[in-house]
Image 1 (cartoon, rainbow, N blue to C red):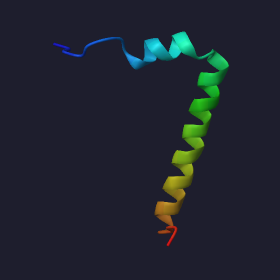
Image 2 (spheres, rainbow, N blue to C red):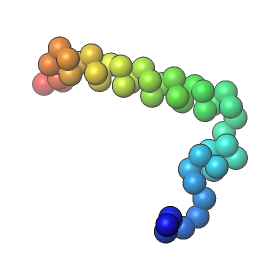
Image 3 (cartoon, rainbow, N blue to C red):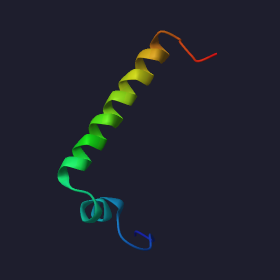
Amino acid sequence: MNKAIGQKWEDIEQEIFTPEEIAESDLRVAVICKVIKARNEKRLNQN
């Protein structure tokens, strides 16, 4: 049973963003995740 109130984010996202904007955002997220993973593997931080 889903007790959430309101719409799902994916539905709202489709209403307010174009497919191109969603694709650009997804690409940014993928790049950031790869950078974080690479930094963690090399044990780098910003200190």
